[in-house]
Amino acid sequence: MNRQELVDTVATAKSESATATGEAIDAVTTAATGRETVELIGFGLFASGERAADVGRNAATGEAIEISVATLVRFTVGKVFREAVSAS
Picture: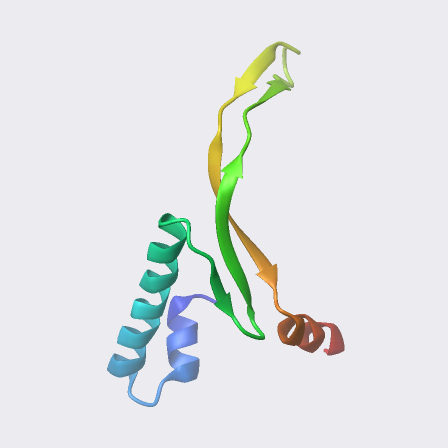
């Protein structure tokens, strides 16, 4: 489901739900950018963190390459959401 499909699903008045959906996405993005955790009870948890630097290998040449530190956003599925998906 993409953003527009979510808006259409929630829509009673499309302009209002499009605005609300956009604001919700912006709020989650802003929180994750600021290293805050966003917990939507029953749905899941968005949390940002860093992946440590590491040494990898170039698959073509076998040469060692340095993988730099990266900031990631992780999503952990909530219990209610997980159970609903498992039941279907």
